[in-house]
Each structure stands twice: as structure tokens, then as C-alpha cells.
Image (cartoon, rainbow, N blue to C red; front, side, top):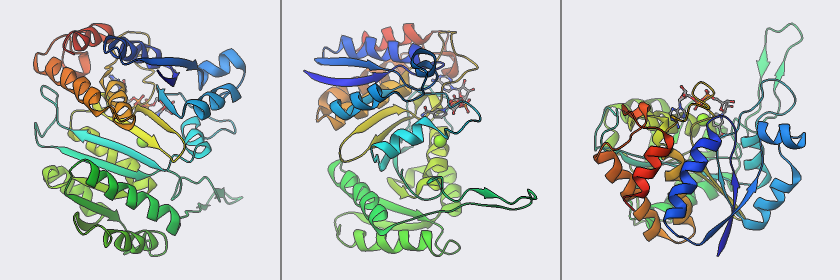
Length: 334
Ligand code: NAI
Ligand code: MG
């Protein structure tokens, strides 16, 4: 019996989590769930956004499946998601983008790539954020380390090797951001030299975005720094039909948190029409991480079969189903 921490989250979070657990239960995986609160739900119940009991649960179980959390605007707390990544040093943000049938994607059947985003440094360290007294000038500190670059690039090459992928593209802007992106690129080249079996190319981030839109099929694994990875992974989600199909894993040495790329979608919360696939696909990544790739494949196949049959698809995919009927349709194809 493996125990995982389950965070039902805010907005559409509880709806897509119920749907996801319905499918996981139908798989009879022998998982047991330890429910914990974070975000607005935690603020309402416990008076704080990230209770110690939640951190303790993740520390103990080392695996969490998490719905989106709403970050209250204003106040001292930047983002609970960023905070969780920091607390557990979840340095690798792994975001696969894969074409599925019957989506509104522009490139049906062409995309199968993974963005590996450095998750703890770069422009997101939250340091040195200052606006001058006259409000005319703003500055921000970015930080890239050799250690941080080394471990994320190594993660990307190891992922390529273990999943039978052939190429890693290092995405950077070292021509302009000479210090930070320069150190990332230099370190990436050193790591790449240790993986002669995996092809490696380098691409400047702006050109990379253009090529992703023109010829997404030429990409396999992309590895990059925090801000570029955040943007590129959303671009890739767009290529395959939107946020409802985009999962992500946040992986560290001691813990891992699996979640959808999308947020709490306040505009459709409570209506029961959110697409549960992103969180379900994140659960698939979780099963891969637990060494149960056969079960992960079983889950993904059921999702693909349901999309192919256009059975109970949610409105974002052009269907007339709802969150739960879609999940039931997937569960019936396991
Ligand atoms: P969002 O991703 O929640 O929504 C963007 C658009 O996509 C909306 O129109 C929404 O209805 C649609 N959408 C998102 N997920 C969907 C799904 N599963 N099925 C169908 N349609 C879906 O982004 P937004 O509105 O910018 O952020 C809302 C809140 O979520 C904010 O408080 C933000 O901080 C938080 N957020 C949390 C994340 C996390 O917990 N990892 C990630 C991103 C945002
Ligand atoms: Mg983002």
C-alpha cells in the first residue's frame, strides 16, 4: 500500500480531484490517500495558506497529487505553488505535451515533447524586487548556479535516456543574458558531453518559440531555465489543444508533487464542467514516478480511447459532457 498526500485545492480543484480519484479507484492500484489542505481552502479552515500538517504529510509520504491553488492577490505571500517547490527543493518541472485525438489542436498527431524546466532559480527566486521611490525604475535579481544548471540538464538527459527519447534541446538566451544564461549554457554543454548516445542541440529562446509553432515535430526534450520554461510549456500546451490536457510534475530528491499546469479556473468553478484530463495525466506521471509505468500507460490509453470515441468530452474539447461523466467514460475503458 502506497500512501500519497492529496490536496483538493481551490476553484475547480475539488471537482477535478474527485473525478481523478474516481478513475484511480477504478484502477485498484492499492493507493491510500491522506487528504491535506493548502491555498484558500486551508486559509478558510485553518487560518493559514500552507498549514504545517500539510507540509508534514508531504514530507512523510514524499508524493503528493495536487489540484490548483488560488493565490490571493496582494499580501505577503507570493505563491503557495512557488513556496511548495522551494520548501521541498522540487528542482525539476517536467511538462509533457502530446497530441491527443479530437482536441482543438492545430497540429493533430504531430507533437510529442517534454519541457524540463528548472524550478528553483533564475528569475523566480523572489530576490531584489525593488521599485525606486519615484516609481520610475524597477529591478529584479536573477540567479543561476552551476549546481542548479547541472542537475536540471542531467535530469533532462537521464529522462531522455530512460524514456527512449533521442534529442535534448538546450534553450537559452546567452547572447544577451551573458552571465545567467551564459553559465546555464556552458554547464549544459559539459553535461551533454557525458551523454554521447543522446543528440543535443542549442537554441535561442525566441527562435525556439517560432520553431515550436512552425515545426513542433522536430522537438523531443527541451531543457531550460525557470522563466523560459514557464512560458514555453504553456506554448506547448496550446499546441496540443489547451490547458485541459497539460500535466506537470515537480520533482526533487526527497519529494515530488504532481499537478495540472492550469490554475483554479474561477470562471468555471462549481459548474462541474472542468476537464479532468490534465490532473489525470499528472496522476499518470505519478505512476511512472512510482515505477508503475504499465499502470500509467493503461490510464493514458483509456484517456486516448475516450477522446477517440468523443464520449462525454467536456465543453473545452467541444463536447457536451461534464467533469464526472467524462471521468466515468474514461474509467469504463481502463
Ligand atoms: P487558469 O489556468 O485557472 O484558467 C485559464 C483559462 O483556462 C480559463 O478560461 C479557465 O476556465 C480555462 N481552464 C483552466 N483549466 C481548465 C480545465 N481543467 N478545463 C476547462 N477549462 C480550463 O488561469 P488563471 O485564471 O490565470 O488563474 C486562476 C488562479 O489559479 C489564480 O489564482 C492563479 O494564481 C492560480 N494558478 C494556480 C496554479 C497552480 O496551482 N499550479 C497554476 C496557475 C494558476
Ligand atoms: Mg505557468
